[in-house]
Length: 255
Ligand SMILES: [Zn+2]
Image 1 (cartoon, rainbow, N blue to C red):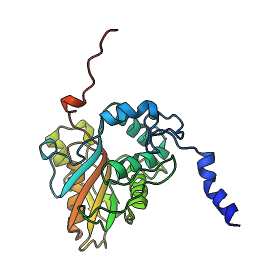
Image 2 (cartoon, protein in one colour):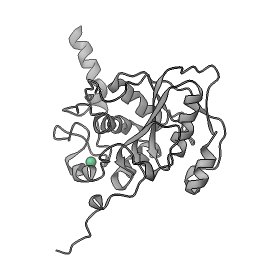
Image 3 (tube, rainbow, N blue to C red):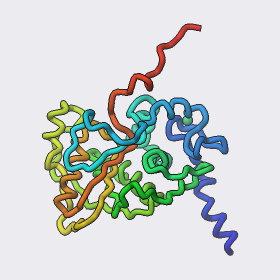
Image 4 (cartoon, helix red, strand yellow):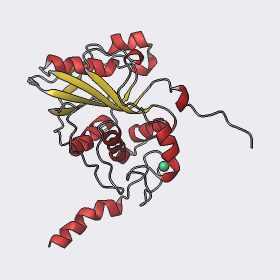
């Protein structure tokens, strides 16, 4: 019986083999850390946000204790996020969350595709009481939304429960149509915690797919603090920041 059960557990991986979130090709045993195909490795490494912590000057945070991202929101990272978010390929959320677990939280990467990174905990990092996804402003019908998918996988890796107290109180204009200043104003007060939410004494890890100005993350963090949370840390797959010079692509040289 045990053998049958083990085979059954492998069934989803056989039916839906894991794919590189950056290009969509099948991941084989040569995948980097079980998540990135060999062809995408140089670009994936070029776009890593090192250190993961976001610089204060680039974003307008308030209410957020600290923010971090695994990547810069450029090129193949941008494609991967959009494919997952708008392209209907939501299953890439698993690989993207695993990259966040490894690059932001220092989890031990999986050795093969489909396996979960191992997280033993780092004493220097605070322990989180719960992971909360940012509610999507334009959810696709019947879809849980990328932040929730990321939160579920990250929660499984880090061993932290996922909770969804946040909701959109007021739909302003889409953030991407606005200037930096307008984004802050537009997002402030746009999120709330559902009535009866009690986060007293909780340390919350807030998850979003992209951090642009920090306006959405900050507005969500404020709502969580108002519900009693003691601190909120924001983490995303990618941050929209200007690439450092050393990370920019060298100009094309003629052969
Ligand atoms: Zn690839």
